[in-house]
Length: 144
Image 1 (cartoon, rainbow, N blue to C red):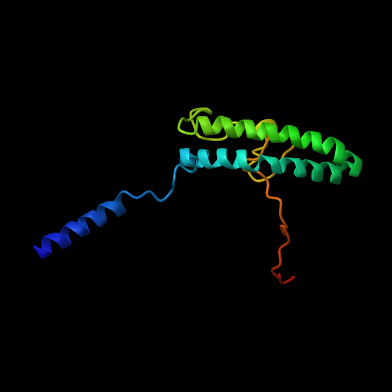
Image 2 (image 1 turned 180 degrees about the vertical axis):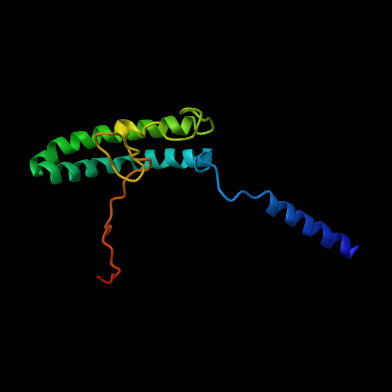
């Protein structure tokens, strides 16, 4: 009896290892749960687009543009992101964009928009983070 249990466990483990796939298919990271999370993030954090619009316009055109055009542009982007969030919240269970769960607002003007905010080419997948972020590499490198 003990040998049969050990053999069954070994066979189940071998079958699990044999059926494992090393590489995940490209569409596997876009799932209904990711779409639901993206929808909630877009709805909750859409208000961050207003200060982000102010920051972007201030750095490009100055203070007056930041506090006039930046507020209007940030508000428009906020409603756009909130609209996409509501749309994805209602349809998170269905693959709506080209039969996938990918966000429908990426890929305009040849840019993916996954990691960077692209004001002219569309929204990023998740809202931008407003915090102190460091983009500097602090590791030392030996010069040749």
